[in-house]
Length: 190
Image 1 (tube, helix red, strand yellow):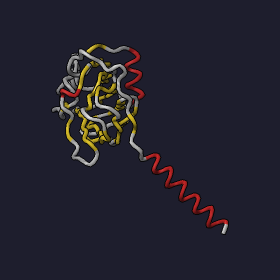
Image 2 (cartoon, rainbow, N blue to C red):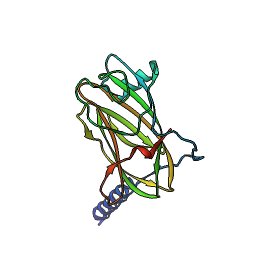
Image 3 (spheres, rainbow, N blue to C red):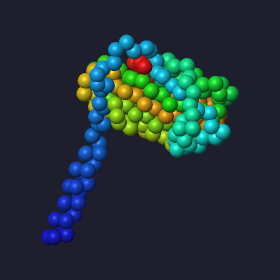
Image 4 (cartoon, helix red, strand yellow):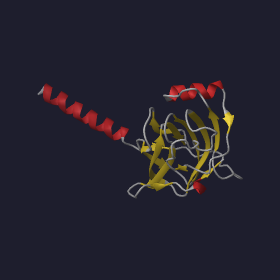
């Protein structure tokens, strides 16, 4: 009887832990809500000799970053080899620190993901919503289910790096149960 009870308790604990882990990440809105935002996102760039990981990207940003032309949003399609990364002045070995706000028009549960080529660490409303630490073609990173408690602006903080070849960076979102689509440029401000 004791082994049966122990096994049952283990299954119940595992199920409860799985349910807790599956809960949407609760985002924190900007407080106070910003006004007078310019469209797009601010960005600073670092240009290391080589970047292979998020640790390399963070180190390059600490060594020195240069302000770049603001991004229009997060819909930068896969480039041709040799094209500049985002609004930077180089095509290869580029690190970007992107900051600003993203606006959700209604409260609710949303699915969010990013496409990146190469590495990415993205936080929205204080939560890590996406991370990829390596090299990949323009592919989705893992998605997150998030809870947006109120409509409005949420802080966005991204570290992105491009290593070799082409580059891309996109953000997609949709209310839970709906088809995920690109976030329009008008959803971003800084």
